[in-house]
Image (tube, rainbow, N blue to C red; front, side, top):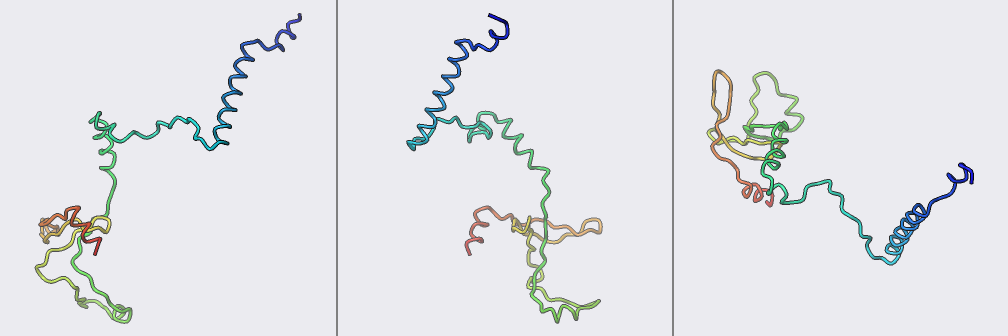
Length: 146
């Protein structure tokens, strides 16, 4: 037998492996046709809930990843609605009346969500706010339901 003919021949092990693959593929197709779910293995891409409980350092590391995300912090003195006509009449020295009362605590919002209230302070010729009341998650939920 020539060397080329020997290369063209397939060994019995190769045939057995090919038949096993075909049988597995046919079983999977039969399971799909019968409506039975295929025995697929879940991809282990995301950690399971509770995994970080076993590894406290990983949970802390995941939390630290979000600490550098910037958010918009706003201190709101008050609001008002005004018509465009009145808005166009505003000039230097005009006074706009707000719905907030003098001495009332100001709202502190993070990305538009109320998280605290506080009072204005001046430190080194700059305005700041001293937090006087932190809004709990339960209080935030109550305000959303209104």
